[in-house]
Image 1: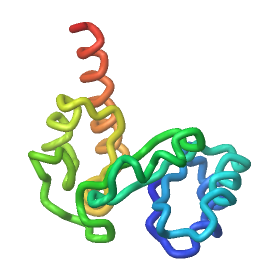
Image 2: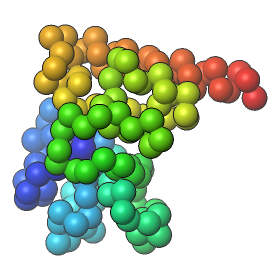
Image 3: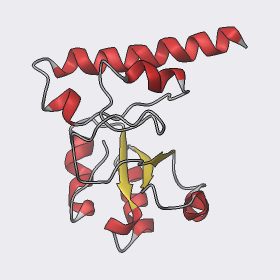
Image 4: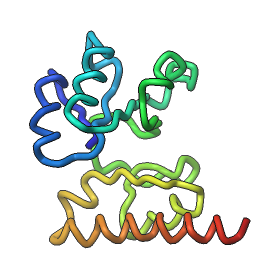
Length: 144
């Protein structure tokens, strides 16, 4: 779950109860990252840290031993329905564009409005995204 809300700390337990396996947040959205990370772990989830496109990878350096995944956002946060960016392989990820992400090496897909708001069957969209990435990953390992 990639959360973009105020008061991140109040959502850890409800998201864990909803059986999310990972809680991904932006550092700038909390005043106490260490406590939030500890709370996420204590609630049985992995920790994801998201950085905006303008941030450098060095921004993640102090956190590398405390996170399970880094998410580099290449669209403007908080604005859904942005057009797919071929040069960034991001924005508007859905059934028509996921193969480009998978071919570029993505092993995890984040899809917002395409899967959740504009689909009559979000579960099938999510399965398609997951399967496309899994198949591309398997193909890459066979090609090596």
